[in-house]
Length: 253
Length: 280
Image 1 (cartoon, each protein chain N blue to C red):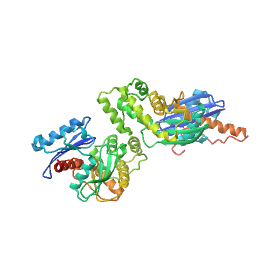
Image 2 (tube, rainbow over the protein chains, first blue to last red):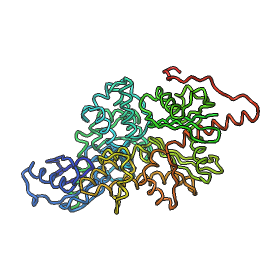
Image 3 (cartoon, chains in turn yellow, purple):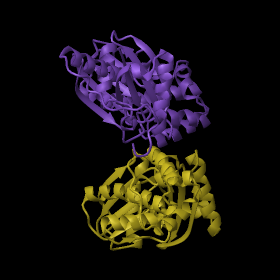
Image 4 (cartoon, chains in turn orange, green):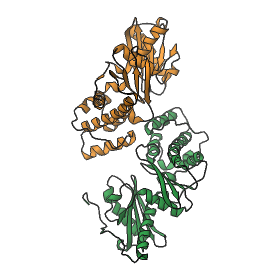
């Protein structure tokens, strides 16, 4: 079992004989302990197993320490690298855009972490920026990607701060910019911050995006445009670290 | 002779009118709002009313602040750094370090013998600016002007570890839900903004006297938190919002007095006291 307690969402994956047999996502809310327990119970219920059937559990993510039932705790960069390698064997660079942080991880042929850069000080460099802007525009987070793709003329933001960005969005709306162009501008701004991280590691393909940011097609396209590369997107980008944790659990325990 | 300084900040517009003996005849603070192009003249009219003067009697008008180009009735535009340094060093001749925390920016100024010699500035990030306090006050459900007195009741400040305003807001809300006393959270918020400001200003090698201006200087909790971090007393003028406009008026006075001393004409622009239009 792999459990990934993130800032916004807690994820769990069950692996049997190298195959995913169940995965579950629940909101983390204010108590990671409760979220972890919820993920565990839901995973077990999905496949009709009990705790005794689980050979080993690895916890990861910012709330890993609160997962009382875990056998081991492993840093999320390791799990992200491992999970990504399982899905896309050719990937060298993993871009992880989460709710409160972004990181770029360089992995080798076995999926081991060679190097990484991490940014968590600023909301404008994480998925939270998208949430803040979606809120102020009263748009569902799931809709911003497709809307952004319709833009022909992304606005350029004068600020790199999520709080000032929120104000700027309001005045852009008042000035008559379309929601599509504003969202494309937000994606571009976030993509530029992510690219700075990639450039600090040095560009090296193939690329994959994981974390909640991978669900946003507008963001993925914007990063592809900034880096001038193609980025592989797993069908379930949010559970990649939990998958990596489950695979490590299967191998090492 | 009378001189006016107009300081159009991101959040507040300030006007100060002084006479040649540096007596303040009138001062007005009003919100800048979205239409600051039009509002400058209204705040000016109010200040004239307060001083019982007509606009013709104002010898020289200096505009400053980020909206300074939207003051068609000004004779000269001067950057806010120069005006703040002038204003603060007139009020506190011993000042070596001036910190101005505005609604959307924060500036640190090194001043030697009344001259600005170095500065640091942040207008890129809401952390460390008045906006940080506004966002946090809103999240905590208190008025921003009450933060100072609330925080003084705290005996154990909460630790706000995030620099980012958005993340700090989330931390503060989660403290609330855990039942942490409001005053302890507010004290933590003040500590966080003070850390950010002092971290930036330290680049200037802080020396006393230290003066704090801008709207945030009205918050006693922030003043105390900055004092604690710097390890020295922080001086605050009676009306900390006015130092930029006051400095602007002082610079106008200097220009006029120097011209008169040399027997030269006063270098005035052709000005009109009316609304700025989009094209003016």
